[in-house]
Amino acid sequence: MKVNIQDLLDEAQCYDTVRELRWPEGRFCPFCESRRVIRRGFANRSPCQRYECKECQKRFDDLTGTVFEGHHQPLKVWIICLYFMGLNISNRQIAQELDLNEGDVQNMTSCLREGIVKKSLK
Image (cartoon, rainbow, N blue to C red; front, side, top):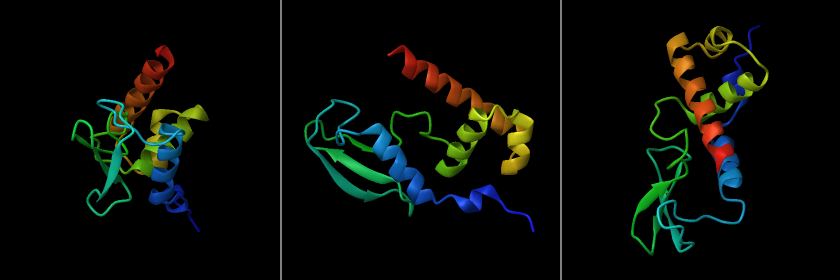
């Protein structure tokens, strides 16, 4: 019996974790940093929460302004990829485990590394 690691993670739990890590003190607008933020439903039948800022009226979601924003892979694939990177697994092995193209994994790991570097420079 073969177990697919992607079946072991819940997409909703990944979003909950991103929210907790991103906003430990409560949600705020990534554009104006106001805390006057309201929920505006979910994005495309996913657990990705949408928000609206009552100060600047801009809309954003859980991934706005993160390395995960604007990519086609589900969040749980990114989380698993990050986990594998922490185990020092090669891009080729990650691609095999996640059943992805090696070039896609190369792009993902580059984005994740770049995001980590930007975060550590702040």
